[in-house]
Image 1 (cartoon, rainbow, N blue to C red):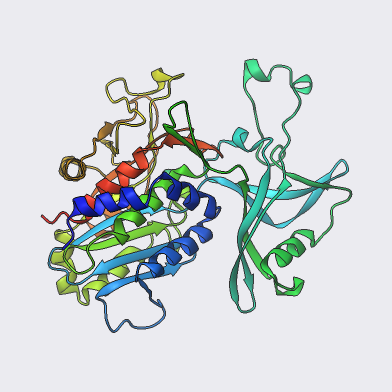
Image 2: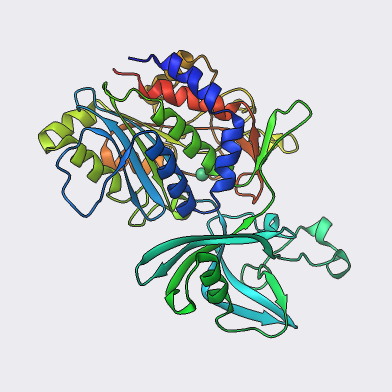
Length: 427
Ligand code: CO
């Protein structure tokens, strides 16, 4: 059996920051995340399971997909319980409406809805492509257009004189409508563009889940290459780190390893495939085979819920809890909240700190300021759906929910090492 330290060394060697940048750039939508992860899993020997049939054998390395969510696992027996890593595949963005062909003042424009808590200003004056999935008579198909098709132009300062004094106010219905051409609105135009991109006839395009993405590639940045500048760091860094940990987990020894990548975290997780759905409990039941096997296994299990954490902002240090400052480069962040916006308790904190120590990486502990509402994540959902001790952790970042975020260049690798160690820790 390979030790976790060896597995960790392999993660570092084979899956450096370049692998992370490639992953982020390959995944403009949750559907592309799931597609990419499925490819990596298949090439690592995982077999895809069909949710619509009975599973005669539950042992082995397997995965299952549902929309923009994917669960993968390495399983032999339930004797040592489950070690579960959760993350989310979605990020706040602009999503194309059902009847999007619109326009005004001589421009052809595309109707969009705001998905999740996007920083709207960050979508202004960017070269935007569009990607997603299209429903056809014979199933769904992915599409992706990386041309600079779209732009949301900011109002000139001469027409908004007080913007730097009073702040930028953006109405999500009227100010964020991207421009993509000149002339009159053309009904059916977006469907035609989707059809061409997906290799379909126009009448095969029945509906779409389509969203915009910034075309600027992810980069390593900073004077000493200490940063990553990229879109969707929240939460593709966690998806990537969890994937590295799972594919390097021991294939045939307890505890069983599970990776859950859920869609719809940014809008509250309550969907058929979100973290609040039955997807994870149903999988664990199928892995166990019977409830009598499942329940003792759950009592021996642990969940790590992996999601972005707030690094202390150098220009706004007063926005942070003064005794819980978080530094980029100082390792994984364990998130605590007394009101259970984060699921971590003392037992979970200690368990993940031990995993970090085993992996040879540092860790930090985050608490939100008492006079500001705290964000949440998938941890409380996974904990309440399973009854399993859960710890919320993540990589420190700035600009959370911007179209272009930043984090450290070393922290994602350290996070993958810590998650690897977590998967191999039995009680
Ligand atoms: Co997140």
